[in-house]
Image (cartoon, rainbow, N blue to C red; front, side):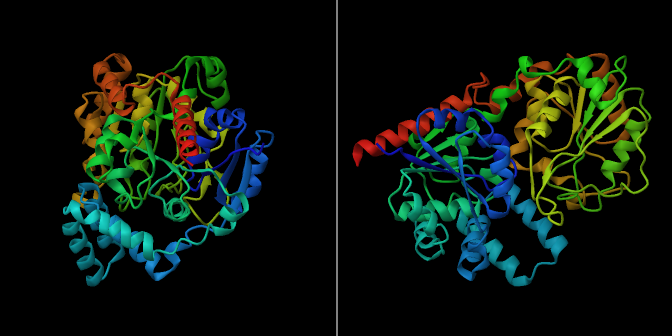
Amino acid sequence: MLKKTIFITSFHLLISRNIIDTDITRLLVAQQLRVVVIIPNYKKEYFERTFKGTGLLFEGVAVNEPSKTKLGLFFKRLARFMLPTKTVRLYEKYRMLTLKKSLWYRLFFWICQALGYLTFILPLIRFLDEKYSPHHFFNKLLDKYHPDLVVTTDILNENDVCLMQEAKNRKIPIVAVIRSWDNLTAHSIIRIIPDRLLVWSEILKREASFYGGMSKEKITVVGIPHFDRYTSDSMIPRDEFIKKIGADPRKKLVFFTPIGDLYLRHNDTDRYVLDLLSKMDVNILVRFPAWDKVSNMDGFQPPPHMFFDKPGVIHRPNEIGDRDISRKDNEMLINGIYWSDLVITGPSTIAIEAAFFDKPIVLVNFHQTHKKGLDGIFSYQCNHFKYILKSGGVRLVNTADEFIEWTKRYLENPALDQDGRQRIVEEQFGGLNDHHASVRIVNAIIDELSKHQNHA
């Protein structure tokens, strides 16, 4: 009897960590399923080498092909511009400011924003998108494998959308996953409705229903799969970790993630924080963003108590965001937060990871030079981050003096704001922080596969 075949996509740098290198793929292979992972063609050698012996098959494709066509780019922008959220408006205003977008671009955006509030128009937009967007780019793979189910791991990614459109055209059932907590309010409307949507939390379930027009009966809350390995049993001993980074075991450890340049114009903030931290009598572990660069680092020499971690497997050196997070990178992240006494970050998912391990959280919201509006760290105003700020589990510091004060207070009393951090975990995990998200995802995939096979 032939094995049932499942396609799983991995087009974003976090998917190899969040989905492929979890129990999800291992459990699916154990179910005697043929699991084909669809990846960018230039990453095929890396994936085959990294996941050798797992039973997974890998197929490379050319990526972002739809938006290289006029209609593909039009529908991609239309879907983004029609998402009527504060996040989209902030990001597009920033793009208009920094990239000097044309009057026609601006006019198109604001017309689409107005249309986005007309929920009855969404089915028509999806119909036109599916009918006229180019989605033949996966035909060869679909003809080769004839998959019984398609699992898209980033429902708003244009490559995933393209595959979903063709799968629907061929009547292949689709299970889709929301990649991250900000996607439904930051990226676009849901361009194609899957048979089953898997989300982290009840918050995302509400957003998928409200902004995406999805029936709640088609949405399943599963938790966050890559947190399944975030257990104390998987940590290396503190002494071993401290030795690994070359730190002083007698001193406390502060974990700092720079904000990066992507949405911080004229970034002098990260360097300023590093200067302030360099004067403190603690170990500092600096985890640089894998998908962004950090300006103003020329000439900065980290002091003996400061250690740099620069994660990411580089595929194309000139593409800043083209990285993959390796298992080694992820182990450094997990242990770095777990063994830290304080986490300092920006508007990042690091706040969730710190809260998961009950670490005090300082959010940087100040600059070396005066900034206001879109020149500052405006991402704190985004839809998804309001839950973090309202939780009572973080301290948003607006001056260097506040930064120094709260760094000192948290190091002296890490129990401060503990209830708020627990609230973050409950909200962002949908109450499912039990390390079994991968099992729930696999069960949902198997259930959907069985349901459609029974109806075939």
